[in-house]
Image (cartoon, rainbow, N blue to C red; front, side, top):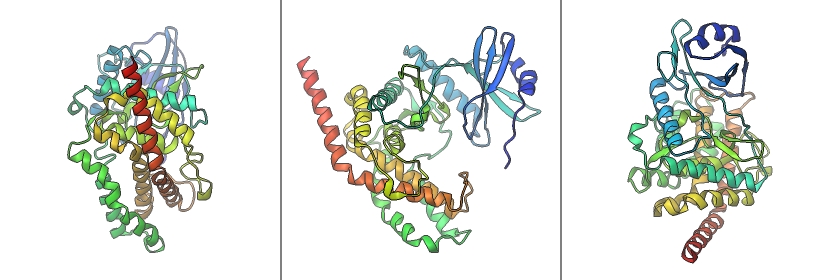
Length: 369
């Protein structure tokens, strides 16, 4: 489906008058996101951030905006003023619906900052860990049932295996047979990869409000490389902190993008991994229960595997979800992620020892105080 380009003159005429703003100076597109459309609007009283919400992806738009409004209110009440403020429409709504164009729009204050696709700087990794931990600290006492699951079963491995087996059975593009060895390996990993989610379903791992998309690109930094806030809040919903930790580690310490074809060149930086975990545990370590601590080293292979099985499922289903730009793109992505899973599993003893050592240092430091 061709993506529509929204003319800035149309936006100024039809959308912006539905918000109370000063004189408009300029409108410019920002970011390169594949889901929402984002604009920086400069006015005589300051800049604002306007977004068209893609309601084909985020179908429960009202619930999504309720989640966002609750989350931002929590952050500001907690004194974390780096987060933007929601700007309501002239009728007091948290977004507007433009019926002629069948589009939804929201507006917030504009936060000056930049994001990073990757880093080799341990200090950036440590700050990322601290920022995500601070987010979890602010949300851990919230009633998660008040937050709508905008993408149900998003990180549920049982559900991802159901989709995988369905794609295998239907095999709509006759792609199964050439990849049967890889498919067999994925099947062989089912018990190991669903054990964490089993503990979630048995209420051993707490459910709280989490971000659910914590790649480094979704952390905003200032010019001094200090964290301002987490961004891209559309996936904020109930989950476990392990999803966020694992999702960050899926890309943060990895030297190659998720569609890199040279699997032999893939590498995981233990230095960057260590810095991130130290940053996270320095803030959040005392608040983890025994099962969260048990599964923390496995969060990275869990989330990496879940992306791998999603890519492979989409490949077998005929590339219906992820955009592709070359032949067998989703298969290449899947092979990449599964190779990283193997590397993460090899690192489990090191990660377990690292986390235990850091936690012991924290206890010793607390006793000294």
